[in-house]
Image (cartoon, rainbow, N blue to C red; front, side):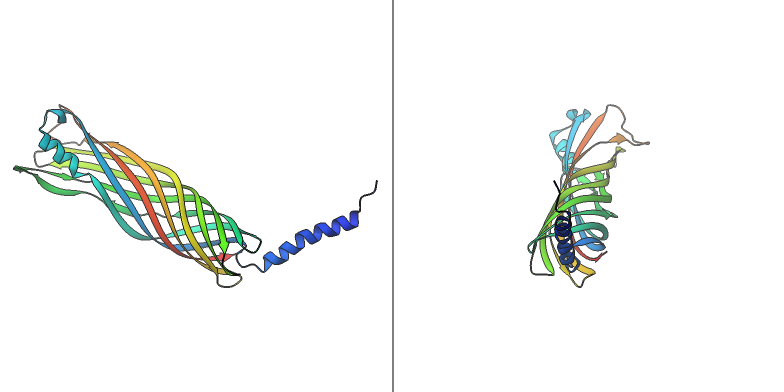
Length: 256
């Protein structure tokens, strides 16, 4: 049995050549790379648990110390994100893509306070030395877009983000109590967001997007610092710190 090789080959070439022709004139299709200027907001919310010798102290003192580093702290900073991705046009309405991003980090929340006098005992005061810093964030996400004409689209994205995190805690008093703790590692989570992209010409495109990632918790336990007047009995402070990030980005990309 002979196969119709010539008609089959012709049909195959047409099947690939026609989409390629369409895509060649599609300014939102293909590989791209670019830079974003981003306004980042990081949020740090801590819960403090006291254990050990704190059990012999008054309810007033325990509540005061536990409340020094309680609640939410946030800070905003401006940075740069580099990205590399691929967009695929699926018909006249849909876009699908994948993107790798790298954020240089540097966002920091300083949450320390004090010294603050103990109510009812003004001669005794405590201070906290706590901070949170995102040193670098990498992300890999998928994109699904809806075209708004030939040169614009809106899209949603979801993927994985991994952040290098440095979190520090500390508490000192004018009575010689001095302790500190530290977490230096990474946290990963889902990252999701919404965006808009517009092709300026066949090479350059402009975009704006909002992203969010809830990076879970880090747990820290303070240790006595050299020179502390208290080492025994052991007073124990444990912190559970929740980490969240938000980014608003505006970027320029080049298709290649």
